Amino acid sequence: GGGGAGGAAESMRVAMQAAKNWVLTVRRSDRFEVTLVRQKDQQVGLKVACHDAGVRVISIVPGSLAARHNEAQHPDEGNRFAPGHEIVAVNGVRTEPRRIFDALKAAAGDVHIVVRIRIARRREC
Image (cartoon, rainbow, N blue to C red; front, side):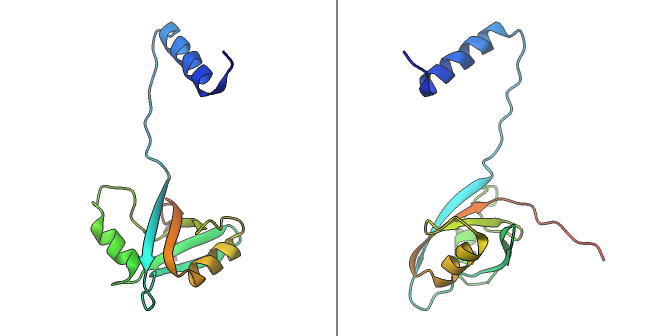
């Protein structure tokens, strides 16, 4: 039978059996997805900055949907909004940063957000 995922898995199995030693490295995903259900007067609550390189989270507004989402997550889970994270899509919009920024500001009802986890860098004076 021809390639595909099954062929790749078989190739990997054969290579692993042939090797005397091998190392398996497991990493957390660098992305997570969240759907916030927004009512008329509720804030998503992500203060963001739009740059040529992307849309970065600056802060989370206390009491907002994003803050309540964070409070409901276990601290060890990687699916909490944080400064430095990058918003890579909002409700399917995933092209240039300005369109993502505009989609976040205009979103009503269910707001589906895809986030790339980034570590905020401190800038020294």
